[in-house]
Image (cartoon, rainbow, N blue to C red; front, side):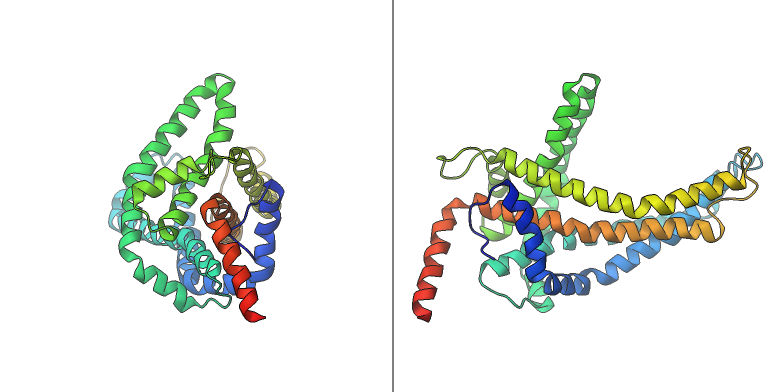
Length: 319
C-alpha cells in the first residue's frame, strides 16, 4: 500500500480497512506481543477491582448503613492507593504503546518494509525513548490544558444551540491534531513545537498552499470511523446489559434490594463484559490511528512526488 499519496474522503475509509486486509495478521500479532500483558493486567484490575468498589458503594446504601462505605475506605486506604497508582501507571504505559505503535509501524511500512517484527518496533521505542519522554511532557503540560480549555468552552456554549455544533467539530479535530503531532514528531525529525504547529496548520491547508483545505475530509473520515467503533462496542455490550438489569429488576420489583446485585454470578458477568468491551475498544482504536496516519501521509505533499519518483526508479532497476 502506498502511503504518501493524495486521498479523498471515501478513500480514507476504504484504505483504513484495506490496510488490515493486507497487513492485519502481522500488525495485530506484533500488537498483542507488545500490549498483551498490559491489556490482561488492566482488564483483570478492572474486573476484580471495580467489582469490589461498586459492591461496596451499592452495599453501603442497603439496610441504612450510611457510614459503611466511608469505613471501608478508612480500613483499606493503603490498598486502594496502591491499586490506584498501579492502575494509573499501567494505563499510562498502555496509552503510550497504543498510540505510538501505529506510528512506528506505518513509518517502517513507508520505508518499504513488509515483514515487520516485534523486535523492530521495540527497537524504535528504545531508540526514541528521549523523544517519547519529551512528547509525554508536552502532551501533559501543553496540549492537554489547551484541549481542556477548548472542550470547556464548547460545553459552556451548549446553553445555546451553536455549542452542540462546535462540540461535533472540536472532538474529531482535537483527535486529528494529537495524532498528527505524534506522526510528524517521529517521521519528520522536527521539534515538539514545530510538529505541534504543523499538526494544527495541516488540518486547514496543504503545505503547497495551492489546494483546497482538507479539513472537512479529515474531520469527516475521523467522525465516520468513530461512529463505526462506537456502534460495534455498543452492540457488543447492549444485549448482555439488558439481561443484567432485567435480573436486578425482577429480583427486586418493589425497589427493595435484599442482595447486592454486583455480588454473585451476574455481578461478575457485568464487569467481565465491560472488561471485554474495554479490550475491544483498544483493538478497534487501531482503525482510528491508522486512518489518522493515512491522513498525515496525505498532508505531506512535499514528499508525494519524491516517493513516486523513487518507486519509478525502483521499477526501472528491476527491469
